[in-house]
Image (cartoon, rainbow, N blue to C red; front, top):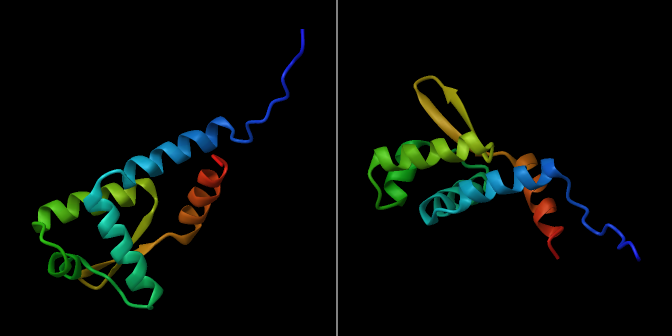
Length: 105
């Protein structure tokens, strides 16, 4: 009997992490919102809820629910400044996710 060499380089923690982030990005609206925040942050611009309401044809409550799902996953961070909340992409989590997904090749 020949034993096959273990070729899977993903451990259970990485699989769970990848599933959680993939779930957060699985909804088209969340993916659009995340990409918008990412692109604005890349230009060193702050993004708050009113920016998202203006940019998308979604109700404010809908945007808030999607932002909350992205924040729970760790993909975005919410920082309060005075009475506004600003959204920032967590580059560390995004990088970790992209590295994990590359292991599927």
